[in-house]
Amino acid sequence: MDARQAEEEIGTDLEKHLSRKSTKKDQLPPEKYPLSDLDNDLVGWDHQDDPTNPRNFPQRKKWTTLGMVAAITFLSPLASSIFAPGIPFVNADFNNTSLLLGAFAVSVYLLGFAVGPLFLSPLSEIYGRCIVLNVSNVFFCAFTLGCALAPNLGGLITMRFFAGLGGSACLTIGTGVIADMFVPQERGKAVAMYSVGILFGPILGPICGGFVAQRAGWRWDMWVCFIAGVLLTVGLIFFNSETYHPVLLQRKTNKLRKELGRPELQNIMTYNKDAAARSQFQILKHGIVRPMRMLTTSPIVLFCSLYVSFLFGLLILLFTTITPVFIQTYGWSPELTGLAYLGIGIGNFMGIAIVARTSDATIIRLAKKNKGVYEPEMRLPLCVFFGLLIPISLFIYGWLTFYRVHWIGPIIALIPFGLGLMGIFAPLQTYMIDCFPQFAASAIAGMTVLRCLFGALLPLAGPSMYETLGLGWGNSMLGFIAVAFIPVPALLFKYGKVIRERYPVNL
Image 1 (cartoon, rainbow, N blue to C red):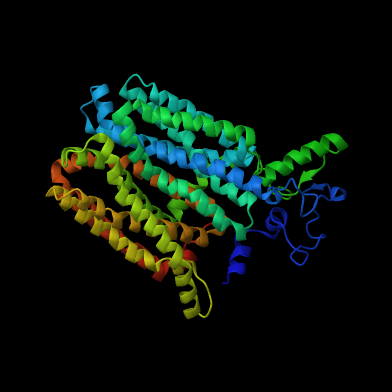
Image 2 (tube, rainbow, N blue to C red):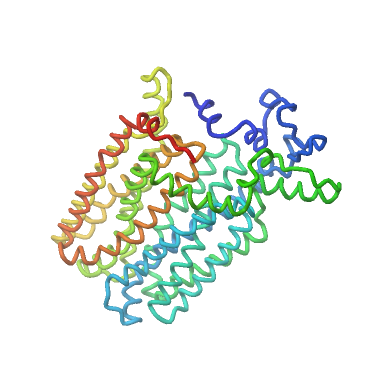
């Protein structure tokens, strides 16, 4: 299957006709889908260059909107990890001696990340991207303020959960905004800009948080996030525009019904759909149920999600344990412990660079060997190599810290972990989108929910595990589990097509 055939499979002719600018040779026959043909009681864009179509927004407006969305998407993941280096100060403030509760105060934020996408995505399909994103951002700011003013550890944990719930909206809606505004040939650059925040936010968080917590107190970690969040939220409220095509056309339809006195007019993007499917209740219900159904009925979604979720859990586990390891083992001050996360950050940067350079070349080479036919499984071979880096990194890091080798050793040992992490995340997510083009959002939503649950719960086992097994065997045990996941991409590469044919997604 070539690139054009793959694109045609993802969307219907109607959606492409409505949502992108096209040349005359690309336009569909007007008798097939009569745009703005009021004689047929249908309302669409006035013409292909209609300025109200988000695809036709001026480039400056597009990139300004995306820049603001990307900025809040950077801040929200940063808020998840900026808190980690301040945990010793939190424990001292609230007289907490439980390492479990201390770790949970960091990871509970991700429980909000897991819950939010289940209803925020379908809500954006009812009311539009703009209003849902703005309300969620206000929610995020309000409960981040609550974190800064928390009177006790229980209140702090509760506020962190709701702040994470509000902060999840940008992760859920951001990619939709990109799809609304940019044609396929522009999305690569847009997605790259948007992904910077998701990638480096959690890495830069602890680096900044350590210095802030040491010099100004842990509450200022939350004050910094609150102040930045308020500024970005105000900017989005005043300068952001609605981009979701069906909602914009529905507003236009409602306006024309009133102005022309024609209640029979219909939104062309929802015309001929089942009435029940267009109801608000059904949209919300399907949005919540579909990701869970895909997780339980599709082996591909399940195994890819389990692998990615385990790795994400390891990442958050490191976020919650690197601080005490470098304080207790190497005698670092809390403000310096954030620098220990640089190894993972450097690895992530290297991983993105390698994947970007090799992914397309690998697909082209394998497609040629397959008589020019592209299969989604062709994205997976390099995952085996990247998967090997995860246990190797954990083994080396664990035993270097156990034997108290110079601090630069453990930091360097975490570089392969960051590299392998990105080398697995990106291909597996793209593989799921290619496998289920019509249900890609639900597949990724299911992965996100499971990933955030692992990220919230796996770190809770960290303190007791390290206390029982020590840093050497504790990290080695995690490495052995990572070894067990290495064959997953190889098996999907070999049997993925058979699995897709045997277990089709019927929703």
